[in-house]
Length: 368
Image (cartoon, rainbow, N blue to C red):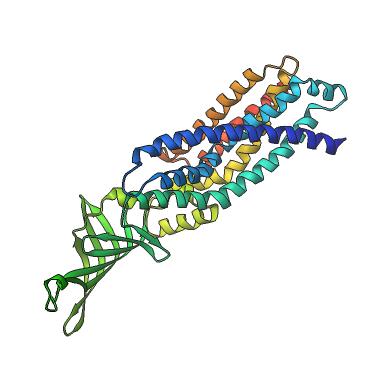
């Protein structure tokens, strides 16, 4: 009886979550499409690139709203039981509220596993490809390799090892080419020019100061007729036409990293003296998100029991959507307000979940 009850309630909840997922993904696809249409036709951002970007962006957005999926999906599943008086029959058969809530939470564990797999295995891959594909299409001449980011600036070819969040560049290598006239070989049509490498410049860091780039700890290797001449500089001006917007497109974003990658990147930023608050908050919000999904499933149950006799699915769904949106807003607001006022990121990520958990327990006590 117990196993049958768990499976029966679980199927209803999973079906409800699947329906809500389909609706939300459809809406988010439309929103992302409208936003991306602003860049349609620019550079190499054509129809294929547009469709690829929109599709690859959906896993990350689904991951962010997954607590709403859990809450509204649980409301849909349990409300179907209430509408058909199945909850009343279960109570009349002697099955307690706690037992039904337990069956719902067991299904909630499946949703928790699903969101963990989505966030750790799917989102880092799809989000990275979406951001990289759009940036490469909009900024022609950019290439990404395992060796870093390659781009062209006039006659120079540039390799960037890393772009930090404040747009500082690490491990910058410049290959300076000059045009060299080519002999005509007896025919004017054969005249032309070749490019020859004249210098290679390596800098440990590049900083943007007052719209001008500056290279730090620089080694310059110049090719001369007598060989290679090397010189070093503590600082060197870099008259590049690279804009901050192009560089920012390739900065590491927390939503494109897994938990382990976030942890390592936070340590890396701290080593280079960078601000880590935003990334620490993203790390703790990822840690807490599975607990948020479980709390949303728990929060859905008291609304169904309080109105099991009267049905009212529309009203419950409306309340569920409001609560889900309220949680998303509180989760974002508490976290960033915490960063402003010096609250530890783990506390800013945990506080909204704790508040909604207390609310669900209070409502369950009233419903029981």
